[in-house]
Length: 203
Image (cartoon, rainbow, N blue to C red; front, side, top):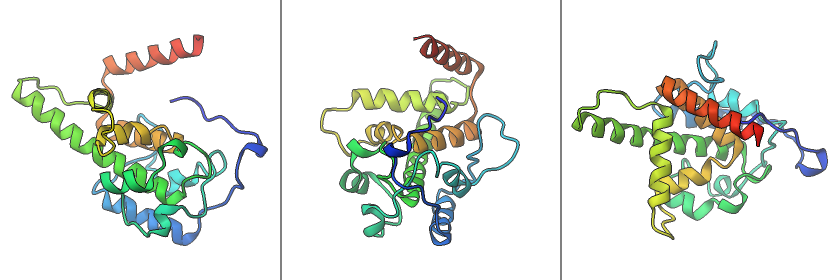
């Protein structure tokens, strides 16, 4: 993951802190994921970072809206239909477009997609006698392959929605941390990622 880049003050909406009510909603979002994800820096974080703590850590570098359309419709969570209807893909990465609560819901939705993909990958490997547990990068690679193969106009396709959602830097970082802390990274994938980062830095 690339280091966070501080933007000029003129480029950003006003920084605001999440309210106690928003943090309470984010806690409920985390509980509904069904797994105690650790959003701390991956891999091997020294402490457990909750979803609300992770969101708060981004408030100064990627300001959140006070409310967005998902909040106004009071949607409890996101799924393929509500993502397609209420999330503007063109503005997903723009600071101030999404609220802190909606960003948390997007992270939770992406992790739900990853859980399903991990189960599918694991079942396939068992059927083909590959007794190696898929890691976080395997899941991302599988979703990326599905997204590339999806037919044009497949706006309800989970893999394409995942690919769109992680263009938001907060969503990308949250999903990355939670996934790597949950499923780990094989040495092979770790080396591939390190090589890709090195090549990107030289470019």
